[in-house]
Length: 125
Image (cartoon, rainbow, N blue to C red; front, side):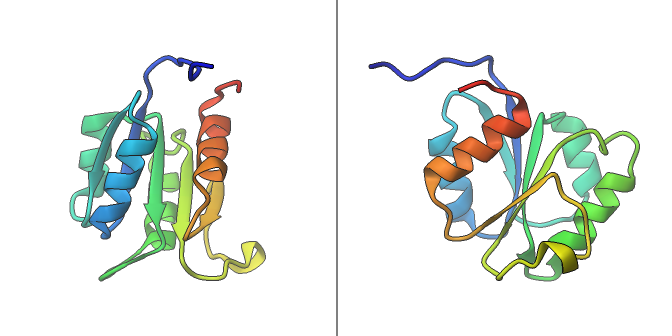
């Protein structure tokens, strides 16, 4: 049985762990994937790439993904882009400090990640 084909989507990764970038690239090889390991000039990078979804780590060196999520959701040019937060922390959704479109804990199950991303992209499986 062959894999279903979908229209190409643009996935933007914000994570300081380059192995996560590699994994996401492999999982979503049919899509265009771009990422950054630092949050410097984040809004500019996002606007330049114009992604369909953002996958963002909560803990990144000197940046907090929750604060970045809030900042992006307050930017009218970016707020429409779904954000999936990735975290190795135990996540309390009622006390997260931001409102992402979805959250997944690391280490993540690949099938679960694909399911969440496809859902946020509006892909039917």
